[in-house]
Image (cartoon, rainbow, N blue to C red):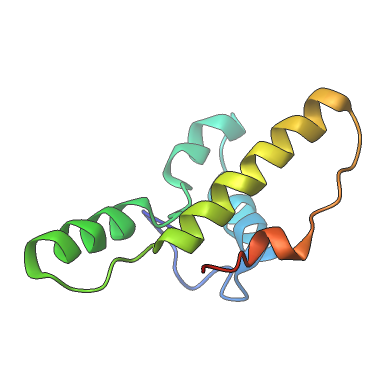
Length: 101
């Protein structure tokens, strides 16, 4: 959580932990949407960007190498194609681990 007003609730983490935090947050509110603004999930974007800038400025390893970038792009394209075709597409393992000659 980016802003966790009650860290004691939902210690199990995951979706169950998030829902426990949400129920605790909105328990005494008249409008449940009024209390959900503080329950934003930390997806790691800031940490990734900080690590990337650190890699450039201090010549440290990049948080995302070229193979991870390739895999995420390939899977995103497959997901878009799957949505467009309304069908499940196979993910060939050899595409996720390309041989570099």
